[in-house]
Amino acid sequence: MSCLASALRRSPTPSDPGGVSPPERGVSFAPEWVSHVARNGCLICSGMGVSFGPESADQAADQLRDLAGLEGALARPTTHAHYEDADVAMQAAVLAHGIAEGQYFVERNKRTALAAMRTSLLVNGFDVTASQDQRARWMLGLSEGLSLAGLAAELRRCMVPAEPLDG
Image 1: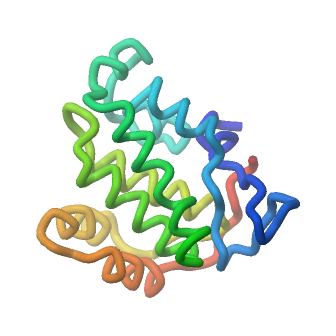
Image 2: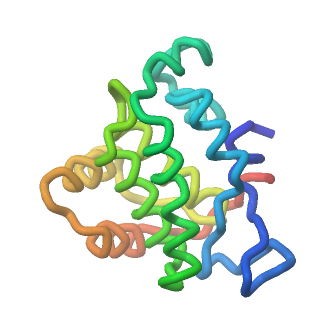
């Protein structure tokens, strides 16, 4: 099991004390994911076979500009789930926006945001049918004014059921 998959496992929410919420409700990101990403930065994608970023945790730590800001961005999906009843698509959009626009890493913020967004969908049993080019346009669109609601709508149009990552 990848570190990311185990760190993204579903955790209890007020409406679901058992920790397994239906896909339309999304997940609350477990605190250990925040810690893992904060320590290992761009290595977030290693469990998905995505190859970019530093080779080691030490190199990744050098790429992190703002630990507290990153932790805040990683907490946003949980906040939206609890206070705005955000679905999986909106939580993934909020996560991507927080990482891409926060610029918490020296480089590769949008790539990391895209990988985190897709991983959050996979953990919840969804994938997207959009091409890599389309997904890249979503990330670029965030810096050009694409709203959270707009990104979530794009995700919903392309979401398909998938085998969830084991947690």
